[in-house]
Length: 301
Image 1 (cartoon, helix red, strand yellow):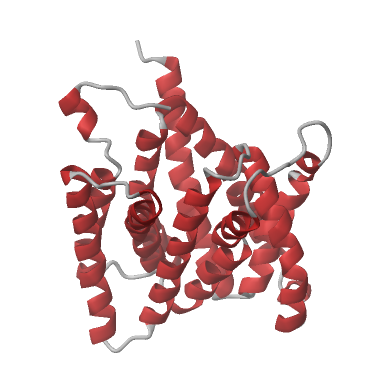
Image 2: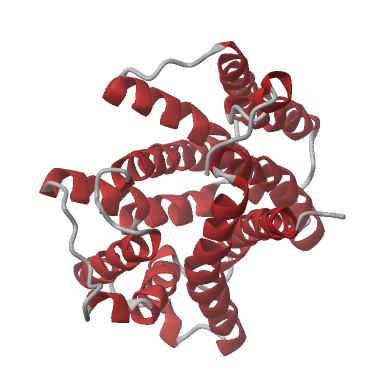
């Protein structure tokens, strides 16, 4: 009989991967049709900020115990600056590039950041995974440059966004906040930062866009990705442990590539398949999950 906790964790991890891929696809669709990055950012951070607003008040209100520098990195890495990099990159590069460069480079930047901050070493298995990721992305990026396309501009923005998210993840450990409080903190400050950013960017396209497009983005950006995505990933971490839960990231490039081909008619080229063949196994190896069978140990939650 299947363990109920394990089954729930697997379903949550699968849901997290599907939501992450869906966010990438919907973001690419939004910025290439009727809406702009600022409009999507408003829904991505404004709606969760409202939903999580009660966490700013009451006995369990947010009270971070970190320095202002750590809190700034926490907000910048996971909030509006991160989101704008992703959404701006989606204007230049196909969704498949987002899946490969975002999910693929995150383990690389996280490992580099952990080494810089705590001198945490990377063992042979994880190092092999990181090498696969690096080779896969290098070959893929080389193809973008040599073909004469302008996709590389979006690819660079995706890499920068992944770097910020890695910094955000490392900063979270020093904030003294629960995941729910952290989400409220990031979304709340991001919503405030949107106000001056909108003054610079000008009038939003939301007022003139077709309401079905606005409704789709509001649900997907604000409720599904910004709110529900957090919940299911936390469930996956609680039931499976962080290393096994992180394996869900390996599905994101595949789901995004297939979804983009089916929905937006993006071609699945040989370069994309080669990158997936290196990046996806690399994510699995870099997570450290493959060590459990050999050592016969269980991951910590």
